[in-house]
Length: 519
Image (cartoon, rainbow, N blue to C red):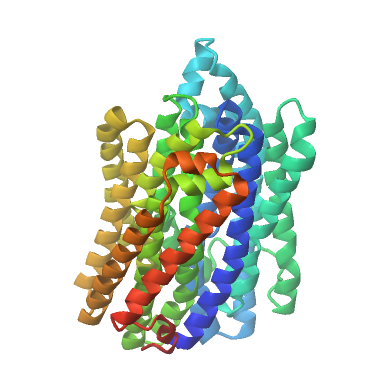
C-alpha cells in the first residue's frame, strides 16, 4: 500500500512540478510586463476572487466531500448506480455553479467593492485609486467564468483520482499557465491596458482545461449526461458533507481574501508583493503538500469504508512523515533564500530591487507557515475521508477569527508583512487543532518513531541552513551578478543545501527512499 502511495505521489509531484515551473514562468512574464504597480494589483485582485471560489466549488470543499462518497459507491454499488451518481452530481453542481457564475459576472462591481474596499472608497471620493475599482470590476467580468470551467475540470479530476488516474488532473493546470503566458506575450502588449489581455488568458485557460479532461472520462466510461438530482441520496450526502466543508477547507483562502481587502487600504504594491511571495509559497505547497494529500484521500476513504483502522493510521503516518521530510527543508530554504529567488525569478522589466526587498519580507513571513499549511493538507483528509466535515469547520472558524485578530494586531506595526505573519500564525493554530482532534478521537496519534523522525529532520535542516548562510553572497554581489550568474549561484546553493540535508538525514539513520516500502 505504501509503495503504491509513493508511486502515486511521485506521479502527482512530477506533473505538479511541470505545472508549478510553468506557473513561475507565467509570474516571471507578468512581473516583467507589469511589475508590482497598479495594473498588477488589479489583475491579481481580479484573478483571486474566482480562484477563491474555485477552492470552494472545485478541488477544495467539493473534492473533499465527493471523493469519499464516490469511493463508497465504487466499493459497494453496481456500475449503473455509480454512473447515476455521476450524472446527478454533474447536473446539480453544474446548475448551482452556473447561477453563481452569472451572479458573479453581473455583480462584479459589488464584489469589487466588498473585497477591494479601499479602491471603492477612493472611487466614491474621486481619488486616483478610484481607477483601480473601475478596472477591477471590468476584469472580474472576464475572469469570473473561469469558475464554471474549472469546477467541471475538478469534477473530472476527482473521478479520475478515485480510479487511480492521478496524472491527468495533476497535469491539467499546465494549460492555464500556458494560456496566460501566451496572452502576456502575444495579446497584452497590443492592448492599451495589458492586464485585460491577461484576464482573457485566464478565461481561455479555463476552457482548455475543461476540454482536456473529456477524452479521459470517455476512456473511463465516466462521461455522463448531467441531470438534476438535489434529492438523490448520494447528492444529499455530498452536499451535507460539502456545506460545512465549504468553509472549513478554504480557511486559508478566506484569510488571503481578508489580506487582500486590508491591503487595498495600504500602499500601492502591497497586493502584488503579497501575491509574488504567495506564488513562491505555493510551489513547494503544491509540489509536496497538495500532491501527498491528493493521493492519501482515496486511500484513507477506502480504509474507512472497509473498516481498516490500522491501515488508516498507517496511511496518515506515511503522509505526516512525507510532509516532515520535505516540508521542513522547503520551509527553511524559502526563508533563507527569499531575496535570491525573487531576484532570479522576477527582477527584470518593471520589477525592481525595491520590489525584491519588499516582497522578500512577506515571503519570509509566509514561509514560516509553510509546514503548517502542508500539515493542514494532510491532516484534513483524516476527517473528510471519514465523512466528518463539521469538526474541521469548527477549527476553521477558530483559525479564521484568530487570523482577523492577528491582522489587526500586526498590520499597524508591520503593514502588509503583518498580514502574511497573521496568515502563518493562523495556519499553525489550524494544524494544531486538526491534529488534536484526531488524537482525541483515537484516529491518529503521532508515534515515538515519528517524533524521532521530526527531531532528526530539524537537526538536518539546521545543518542545511548553516551551509546556505556560509555560501550566501552579500547583497552587493547578487546585484553585481548578471542573470545567468544569479541562476547558477542559486542552483548551487539549493543543490548544496539539499545534499547536506540528505547526508545528515542518512547519517542519523533515516533512509528516505525506504519510505516507499512503508519502513
